[in-house]
Length: 281
Picture 1: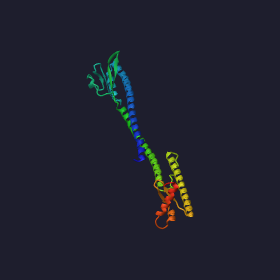
Picture 2: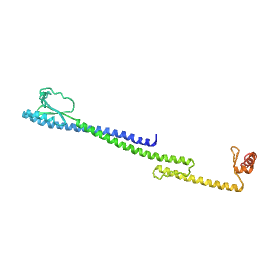
Picture 3: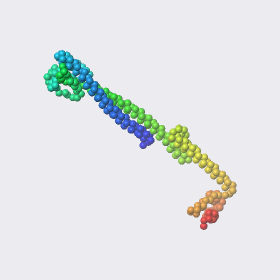
């Protein structure tokens, strides 16, 4: 896998996982906090709504009670409300057909408040609240967070891929420069001038290439001077390998000793001289 893709994945995957974990954690925390606030609000609302019910019972104004429970249904966050006695028999409701029946709460999110009339507990007010709006708000916040995070992750992935591409391209430039230099193109340079680590490596390579090219040029010049001196003096070069006893001669020395025919005798003579000079028998 290319470096650009590795960098993009190394940046994108952990960040994506962390973002999703953060979103889920925040959703849970917000849901818990919202549920606590909502419960407190519903309990306070139920206690407040019990006051006009108690007043209607004191005044025996049952028409007012009916109107009160009918109005409860107009509230966007209240599904239903009933007043029951201590035996859970319905004594006030928006539906007259429910009067006198035993109350059985259906579903959840029911909140209660005692109805104390004339210092005596007359019954209980039951209010059924609708939590769909608050739940939808939490879901909307979560979905919005997911969309924003996805957009940010896409931008992050693009930036990571761009950074990886830049690094990969510059590393490829270094590798290509090294290959061209190894193939004999001694004049090639990376030309990197940036102040980062890769730029430092490129400049070090260019410095090394300058030094190597200078050394090779100097060696060529030295070889040329040596060849001129040997040609002027009518001399050649021989090398005696003490480990193997072999002697190597250059073309000029071979031509001087035997321009025509076999080189065996001259080489033997040179070998004997070399051994004597090296102290080898």
